[in-house]
Image 1 (cartoon, rainbow, N blue to C red):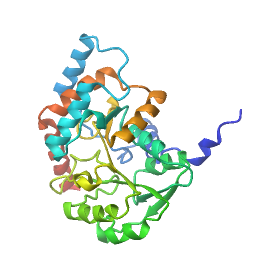
Image 2 (cartoon, helix red, strand yellow; image 1 turned 90 degrees about the vertical axis):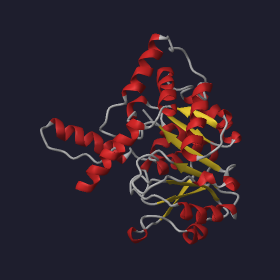
Image 3 (cartoon, rainbow, N blue to C red; image 1 turned 90 degrees about the horizontal axis):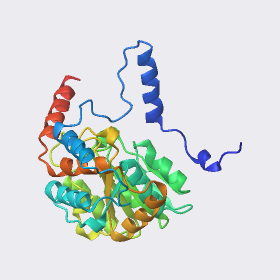
Image 4 (cartoon, rainbow, N blue to C red; image 1 turned 180 degrees about the vertical axis):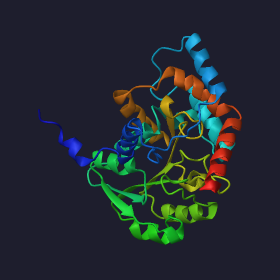
Length: 302
């Protein structure tokens, strides 16, 4: 059987390969410290699980809208306003089966053959793989420990070319943990303002697991609002990795493109998970804060 050459463009995710190896070694009796997957070792908070049980009892078991239920998209907008001071409408939101799918939707919607995508190192391995699937060109931007694994405005300015279509970064960063300050994001924003041909993906999935203080988003810069795509989800902050619920906040043109793409790939996300997500996003963050406080205590012991 001849498989598609698409598979030659990218490799198996190293994080999943290492996680599989860890499980195999643990099954053989080895004492393994597994640092492969970014997965909280906490259970999903009780009030979210109760919302899911109620959704089952209330027969939320049918096909869902491709972009997600309207009241869930409204809940995402509520969260973005409450936690980030950002104003979005439901028409700016697409809910997906995990933040990874949200990323795939955006990259496949934007990138054509040989479009350049800048990714600071170190980075989550899926970024590059998705660009390669889309036949784009990955341009890695090296960061240094001495500078906190963060890029500077000068580096960014020198890396952008007329062929640059997309810039992808995460803050807090997976895997380095780097968190960009408000001032650092402002300096990067100035570069992007001078380069209107570049779209920005801001992966904010680790937003709540932040030991440096307040989280800031580059989307706070209104001049970039029509070019920033926020990627987020429930896996990290709500200990819901297996529930598979991510979302994006983006300009309407990108939302429509991703809705079209997702409609052919998976359609809408799981109905019960969506109902539980409304509770997660609109409830007080008590359980999230308690989890992060425990992470901080462990961090001090290492």
